[in-house]
Image (cartoon, rainbow, N blue to C red; front, side, top):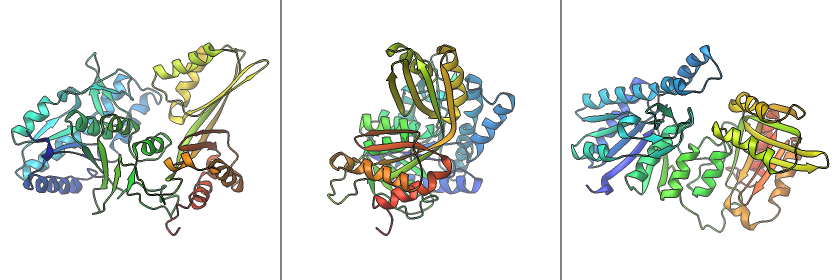
Length: 406
């Protein structure tokens, strides 16, 4: 079968958020089939459904994130698959419906944030050869014990890109409720503008820094296998953003985007025993539970080490309990929660001086003193008080020349 006609298309929760939208999506797929395309469709749960399921589990135990949690929240995508299947059959398009385990999407065993280890695409090829449209439940897989796992919020993006990579496709289409990736969140920065393209590197940084662009692991897979991601709106006929293109425009701004993440928790531990072992024990304990540690600051003083780091506030309580079991009682643990993280990202930062200075002056002008700060070749991030996040974002966006009227 020629892969040129195969296209993986992922539709998010808003795209399947109502019966009317599911009907419209089925009509769209029917048109694609009539044009000779062979779509492989990946769907999320209907908008709001995952939150409803999480809330149900939370009524029993708000902190539980084990295999029973995954069994509950994975059901949202199953409903979307079934409803879209009915809508396609109504239009004379024969669907072939798949949950994650039926495709052999194998993951590790980290409940609620599993990582894909293997995908078998034989059943997809068979469905396509039979003239069917595969409709796949995103966000889920099966571990080595045949337990249902989920990939974390936004995990349907990862399902779609992983399928495109397994099918050896050049690109994957992600449809959402926004027409493109923006230089910042337009709800906070009204002068934000759409971006025509981004490199994998920039997108990875943006996703890891809180931008609601794509599930970060979807970008990791896309970069590893060279799968360009085309992000478009389901509801608007706009060009969208192509991810995986390195622009050579000499006039491209030094900074491509201002991103931010709310609900960040900062841990401060002091004193810790000197040496690598105390640090490795802490971070190994967090990693075993899939807790992502972001900004890290370590200082060695005569009386011991001082360690500060940030995690998502969603993981705060679990991280606190893990650390309590690792550090001695003589270590003080301070938790600042909730704070917010603000960042600037851009490959142009590599070759320009004064970026850190401008960043810090913007924070100073907003009286947003950082609790933590970190830099890399293409990003600067700081954790600040949440009430100062929005004015700081607008100031940075303006000062780095990203405003729509710049």
